[in-house]
Image 1 (tube, protein in one colour):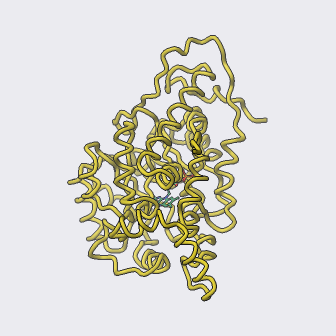
Image 2: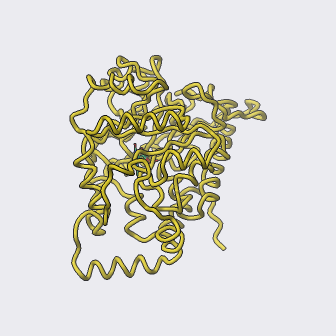
Length: 383
Ligand SMILES: Cc1cc2nc3c(=O)[nH]c(=O)nc-3n(C[C@H](O)[C@H](O)[C@H](O)COP(=O)(O)O)c2cc1C
């Protein structure tokens, strides 16, 4: 039996377990996937200083973000339709996060509703918001998030319109395919009987839990995309942010900041935090990788709000590098999806365990005993 050792091993297993359409929906990025690739490559290009004889017998990975203690500086990122990769997928994510002592963030466009996640976990979770034209509905959703005890609001700002994801086009997810294409896709799905039994049949209803009442019946992901294009509000701008503050009393984090000027605007607005993010390379292809954008943003606003980061994190070393460059914590998106698609909730737990172990080992070999000691001089400057 194959024993997955790394998060990349979980990705390989997920590729086998999921129909190609679903795997690519998770794994893919926008256009030529230049930014998706850069998110990984730029992490890998960073070198860590090896330091010795520094007493690392008492390693601590605990940290605080937005007033909340977490055992490891990692948060499960909001993933729309996560329940397509595992039965009631968001509930699995929330339970695994609670066990590992880290926050889980629920997407607006999740399959499980806020109320279902409240039932699934005793830990406070976070809620991610997409701004929709129907402000009355958004206000109601924020009230529901408050009642569900959500400890922070991640307002995603990098999706004025949906990025073009060509793997989804090629797989016939967003527009029609020929008869031959349909047969090939149906055959591919049938070959993944475990997924059909566990998710397609066992995971129903496969609809947007938070949007019941406003979302019309969708027959395909193409219908979902059309609905998103018509309902998400691309006119929303900095001057409208006060509306979010009026309707949410807890911490507000703007997710999808990639430029120091926008980071300053977020701090001027009074955001409690930002996530340096390019939506995992799924939106503006050609935008910089998040790890390359991080130092400029930390310089600009690091003393005014909490800076989080996501994009391309596939191991504990990436977390260590991001924290050394000034991030408070990292969100992981695809990593938890790969774990879940491969081995369910146990797979997510295992992914979180791998991250923790790799963070500890990296810290020890870099001569760092606690998170606060991670500084830029833990890395070797690039020429
Ligand atoms: C399949 C998928 C769905 C996503 N859905 C959402 C979403 O609903 N809301 C959101 O703010 N970000 C969403 N994201 C972006 C993630 O929250 C996160 O920014 C990104 O996955 C980080 O990159 P990584 O996957 O390389 O870790 C999604 C990402 C993926 C891969």
